[in-house]
Image (cartoon, rainbow, N blue to C red; front, side, top):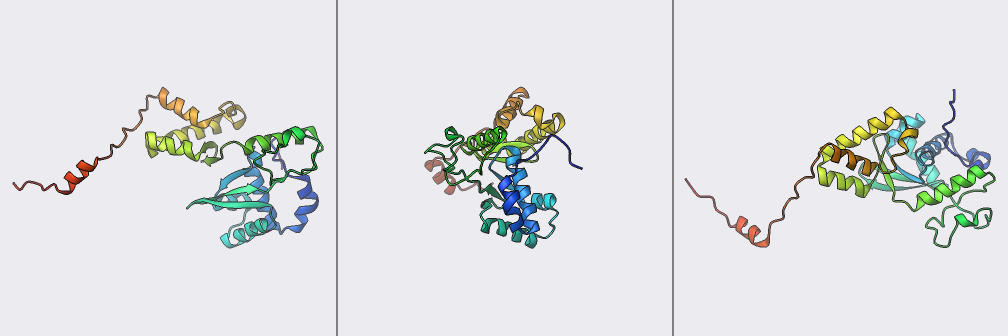
Length: 230
């Protein structure tokens, strides 16, 4: 059974023409990538193999990799390794230069010139297209746990300023809070980074004392230091 009203926008062109050209597992993976990106109003997202396996039901890594490779080969997605634990997947969406229905949405400085959105024939789809363009110029945000979105710079600053354990505690608190009130109500929190910072200030959490670097003279003295014998 499918519930309403939550939906993820999928290209009509893909359903009408492209889907029949892909193997079943590749279709499953592409829909999962759509959900993790467009479903969250983004064009790309860091997605672990375990997440794709859970969403698609594909249990074996070799089978999953084959489906991903098919999508990359046929230029439905691109993939970039971001760390030792996962890849960032990017939908290969193109914007037609012949599309004059919304000229104000396409500029010469568009950072996504090489990406193309298919023909748009409804007002809703035009609004979605605008969201795509706006999201393309925003800093890329990784998802932590189920709901918390932070840029790499924001996450690094939290762990550097407050310690990895404290940062993780507050990320978990925010994640649990969003799960409790629902993503619709939580949409008012435009920046998860600043929400966490506000909660830290409210709870009186202090920044870690910066580690002072030794001067050249101190390093030399430490190298030549000989403990006294009792």
